[in-house]
Length: 252
Image 1 (cartoon, rainbow, N blue to C red):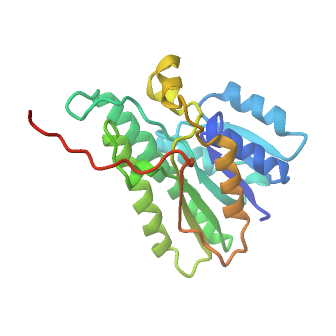
Image 2: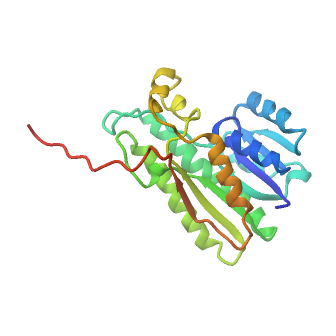
């Protein structure tokens, strides 16, 4: 792996942990996020380990994504790996009660943002003769749960989009992987519950969830395999989480 690694959503959670994992291996990093204060702090932290830059990027802004990722400094412009990590869940209301703004934000970020970044970077990876796209999905893309509605739908898109990219890229030496974590203690639940720490903490009460570092190790492993190996899809849960049983509502 000789080119740069672009990580979206690098200011926290999986993105931040993944940046730290690749920095330990001396990989050149482009760290993208909306919260530049956090990105700058991370760049300062990692600069003694590797070459890295931070860029302000809201993946929902199609024109900004195209302009920013197409005009990186020359020493970072040879992109070998794109890690589409930026994403979020908002709310746990049922589909008959949900705030439509939440649905819009999840679609704009988890689907459109991922598409914009991929479409901008992918031609560069193809033209250099190979590389890797890693998309962060979720177990919610395969397994439903109450309140998962649009979030699960967006992650089902990520799963199927990744599969179709693989078929598009046959013969071009570009790997595509969809990593699908289960319960993981990051800022995910805090964002979902709009800053309500009590609700967020209850999600992980009495169980041991995955950590951001766990997912970072998995991403590092996947991208470090020999170039003829493609992990198509990797679903991972903590041991004390499994698929929900069938639910049956019975009239009294």
